[in-house]
Image 1: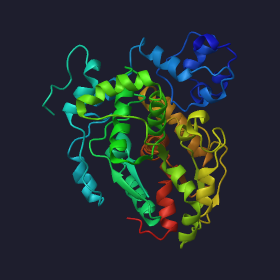
Image 2: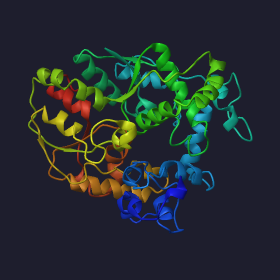
Image 3: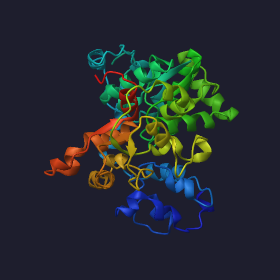
Length: 132
Length: 263
């Protein structure tokens, strides 16, 4: 996928973060080496305009796993592993829903998340089976 | 007609008004929404940034809707994109087999039968019914901001124009408002930068809000856009509180034109 890239720079030209002074994966694809794979809004504009059809999203995700994550991403991932949502959502949400006249919602159980994502929990399990 | 309603983490946690306005608006059009018991995070970009298991999580949500026999209705850009991408990935028999091996532990199975549609798509498909139910034309100047990932990449979305979509213009125009062209309605809001560079996110939000000056209200259709453009306005403007611009979700604006009570 990245082999298809001709470093034409179109992706960097359309990137909002680049226009605001940031350096994203599009800097790498345009031949630069100063960038962060984590700085991206996933707006897919670069992907849309890429004349070579490079899967920029996939390139970026691969790069992210080589760079240390910003704290909000790390925390979000931890929340998903613990409770199944990117934010700390618990049964209390149903009181808020009731105040808006919304039906209570059956939240995903920690056991289910554990069965789905246990391979992500390295080195220590984030939430032992059977325990919220 | 009925959909399985997938609000996503952000709307579920912080924006019940978006869920409520969506449900009431669609009910007025005869479209039912059924909550998905035990639905979880869609999987991306947070999970995908760390692990390929994002696909398992996305497939899990697709499997729940499939078991309900319903297509999925989303209200955020990111969930829409992620679930669609998962559905495409699951077309590969090997991928499907691997994921179903995981889901079997929960007694679930995914084939990719449930389609994923954002609220905008469903409203566009019912535009005539919507037009007929407008009872209170609105005298407002409205600026728009489009949810990027509902439209891009175009080969995945298959809906509207990926670079210059028109759906929000078409829907909002039904209410009689004057649409203020900002020149940045198709650009990303930048909300996701909050997770890696807060100053850049605020600069992006400010750019969008400044371009929307002259409008009475800015209308969005994504929880993530709303998080930056509405919830973070205090940080965007700092001591320039007079610059604050009201921001409404699309179904809130449409609901007003249908005569639905604002609360």
